[in-house]
Length: 78
Image (cartoon, rainbow, N blue to C red; front, top):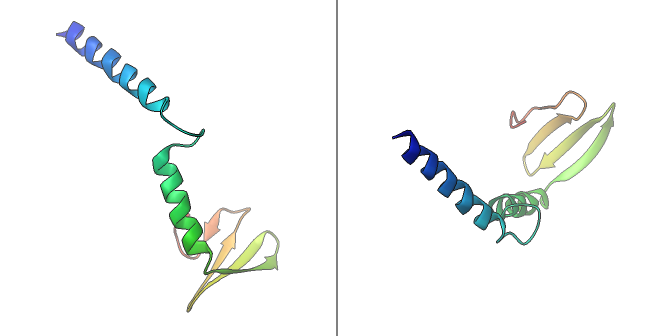
């Protein structure tokens, strides 16, 4: 039974290596897709520097404050 598990793990590792060879960059295709979606959303935003590594993000009717140093955002997504 342990031998079967070991073979399955080896097969899975080989599959992942083969999948990695299909990448066109150092970033996975799913990560690139998420990045493109976030870039589209960010195009509608306006960014204002408010000092001390803090920025105000205006996204239509919504306003968020991002603190880069503290890694905090009022949108609670960080």
